[in-house]
Length: 153
Ligand code: HEC
Image (cartoon, rainbow, N blue to C red; front, side):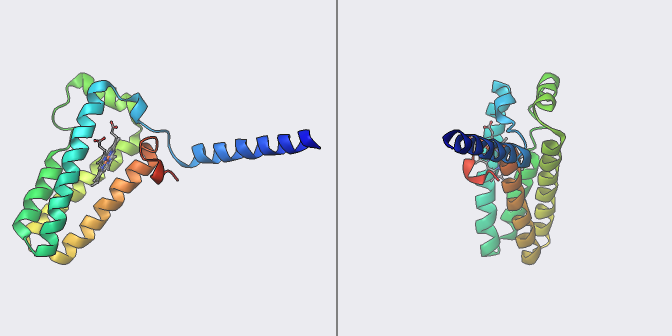
């Protein structure tokens, strides 16, 4: 009887573990080189601070700041700047294609947000800001679950 219950709970635990791994992709962070890890964290912190500035600017109708800060987010695209060819190779071998795709999408949205800023279009700014926030959550949920356990699916 006891062993039966034990075996049953072992199966349950295994199933739970399996479903956790099956839904979320493996975290990318442990596979990053020290340099990429540092660059990515720097990029994330500057994105976060620019998102805060954009948010305040949207609610105050300060379109010029929306355009400027959104452009700064777009330009922080690490894949396009501070990386040497070797870094790029390291990055590509550390992260899956889905990660790169999300990063590109995110920076594309930042460009659209800058355009909505230049056009004084508050409604559009709100929509894009929301889409960008969903993008942050999606990438963290799928690829950074080790650092943000509160987001793991
Ligand atoms: C394409 C994937 C991706 C997207 C999109 C993304 N992040 Fe991240 N984020 C990461 C990764 C990977 C890390 C962990 C970096 C590390 O530990 O090396 C991270 C870490 C962070 C951190 C912690 C930085 C630190 O100092 O450790 C913050 C803050 C952050 N992200 C904010 C944001 C915000 C805000 C957005 C959206 C506006 C966003 N991220 C969108 C991948 C992403």
